[in-house]
Image (cartoon, rainbow, N blue to C red):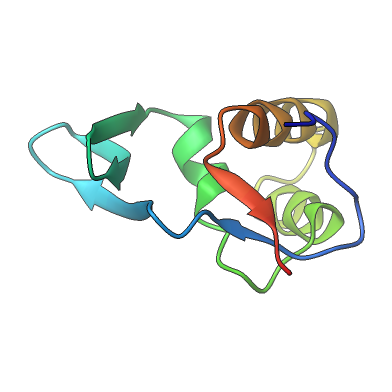
Length: 93
């Protein structure tokens, strides 16, 4: 699987994953049939916007609006490319 994501296409979770807040873990998680992935700190904040309606550019813009004064683009792109490489997210067909 390629680690590169297009900036202008909508991205979404892979079908077998569910994103949710997990009180017992005190963080957001990705649940899948074989287990879960803990998404602590900024990774959970980024994944909130991977809802099947946003592009990578849109996610960066929304996060920079939510957290003004910070250049979040490199970190957001890096995390989403990591998530894509792990197979957690995909480009919406």
